[in-house]
Amino acid sequence: MSANDGKTSPPPPPPPGPPAKPQPKNPGMVTVTVDGREVAVKPGTNMIEAARQVGSDIPYYCYHPRLSIAANCRMCLVEVSNAPKLVPACQTALSEGLVIKTTTPKVQEQQRAVMEFLLLNHPVDCAICDQAGECKLQDYYMTFNAQPSRLEGGKVMKDKRKELGPLVTLDQERCILCSRCVRFMDEVPKEPQLGIFGRGSHEVVDTFPGQQLDSNYSGNIVDICPVGALTNRDFRFRARAWFLSAAPSVCTGCSRGCSIFADHYGQDTHRYRPRENEAINKSWMCDQGRLSYKYLAKGRVPVARVGRGADLREVTREEAVAAAADLLRTHARQKGLAVLASPLASNEDLLAALSFAKDVLGVSKVYVGGRPQGQADHYLMTADKNPNRKGLAWVAAGLGLTLASFEELEQAIAKRQVSALYAVGAEVPGDVEAFATKAEALEAFVVQATNESPLLAAAHVVLPAAVHVEDEGTFTQADGITQRFRKAYPPRNEAAPHWKWAAELQRALGTEAAYTSAREVFRALAPKVPELASFAWDKEAPTNREKSGINPIPTGADGRPPGYRESGIPRVRGI
Image (cartoon, rainbow, N blue to C red; front, side):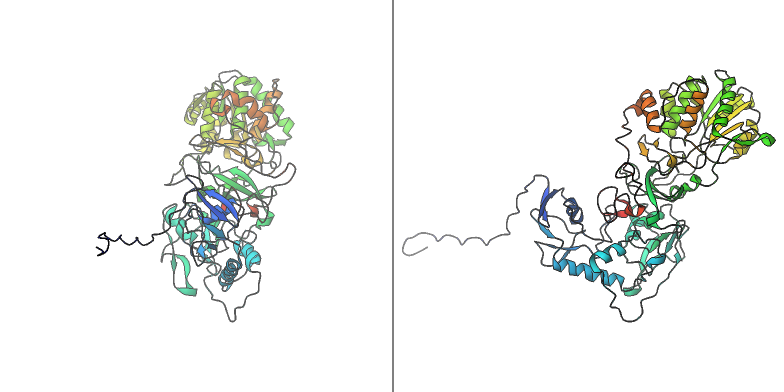
């Protein structure tokens, strides 16, 4: 208390606290500025994704949108307003009002230095590397470095061709230790079969001692490897990426129906790659599905055939249709005529063929063929190895047809209740040779087949059918999701889609079939199927080409123009 006024002195002011957080400019969002452009993103979005929204590309190797953050490649370091040093864009959280700079001299020098470091011990064997044309080392070298090596002395030598497993070969000299492959095996299929061993310049990715990479999802690490360290043994040295074209398609290995790219050169499909689909396969696919493309070329039925045994002869399409029509005309609307439908056929094939079977041939029951059941796994692969069983059930129900099992067809043939058979697809779930022996007793057997089979020896008429990459259409996978697929190349030899053979047979039997494309089949007949009636066939088509008349662009661009692999959807190869 002061002696003069008798009053208490006021307490000293409290020390200043931290500055108040800025109020969000866009409630529920985080607003930041990237290279002078403002963008509002969802909380939790990293700087790489935020920068992409305003057209700024931050380079990276180890980051993958579906894997945990490692931040070990240091390629994505950027300047930010709240830190004195460069920070990794993949790992650093965004905050309100943050200013990010990705093109300053300091950032550019860091990118150049990282590229020089990564290339010090790289063998630079691009001329023989499968990744050439799809390699981020190549792309980033030209963008961020483009200088000769300053290394004096020899490079560190490592295992050059190490077979990790049945599908994957590792070149340890090319590896930049981004750890994508290790994280994928740990986090997605949850089969931790890879690790990083050693220290310093001798650090390598490898399997654990005495073990191999035997996962059914090992092929995905080839897709996400940003360099040429991991290569697919099935595709190795078979084709250059810039010679291939990519058609958006659907894997037919099982009923999961993973979205894929079918990479082809001419009329040969060289590989399947997963195509992003959040609802079905995300960015992945199994190894069995990845290798299931081989039937597209191997053992195909080249031309139409008429007759059995010594009377067998190759004929023109017109002669084959006439012979098939004569056989079916004799048995049409009779009790002994049966129809066998394969769930490998597309919805358009089934709509046309089963409409023909009901309206012209007069059947009310359809027997289900297709591949036999197989094994499922813990992630994507299903036991049903047919891509369109759900679609077959929908189409049959919509057209008022009942489905019966293949075993019932075998019994009906054995009891002489079936004397004629029209088969849409030659795939059967039982013993093919045993069924072929039974089918020899049929008075008429017309089959539309994509591949050679012992069953074809019992057929009176064989019509060569196209596979799914040779036409457009839709499949409905096990969960009831209908997907469009694009045509990659024209049908081989004299093959034609199932719907086209059905239309020609319908015309030969004196009934009008107005459709001349898969699109017209869907527009004309899908309204009869409630589950397909609402499907927007044109709207749901995945992008295949930029303008009408322009061929599909190289697969190395993943469906985008060269130089723009990092932009937009689909994000294949983990970008």
